[in-house]
Length: 188
Image (cartoon, rainbow, N blue to C red; front, side, top):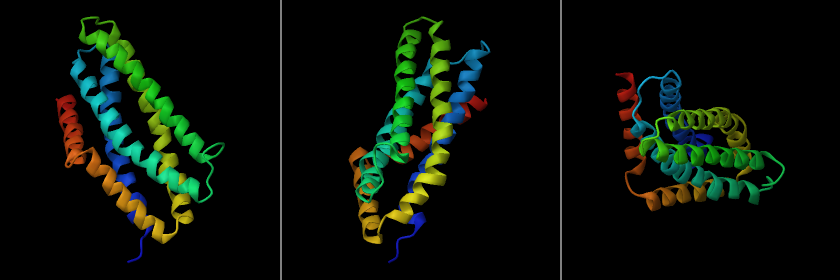
């Protein structure tokens, strides 16, 4: 069986589409907070759960631990090149997540003024990821497809499946369901 571009990076790009849907949810919720509209802190709490567990552990974990490691092994430096940029942007996103989490805790404890800080950090996270995802889809992934030998692509696919099993069966569907739930909640 020949491994194609779709076989080795399509799953990651499909995850990007799910992440982008959550980014739209968070941008919408942040906009409501910024306009002084009522938004439940649970929207951001569920968004944080998605970011931490799906976007970071599930998705970025596969990128950083598996794909990036394979690309480095085949000559793409982790320092001073595209991988360094991707890793820096992952960390930049994590800083916004920490800011959002800290402010959300205050909001949930009754400090309504913290809602704006949650929204500001959510928007910052969304801005970083909205610029980051196209770089991976349009530059890094095609570059990786050209660099990786077919046998390594097969190993990478098996490693992705193993990482997903380790996170828990059905977790991907669970987080897609969470995105759909939030989309409906904010549409109404």
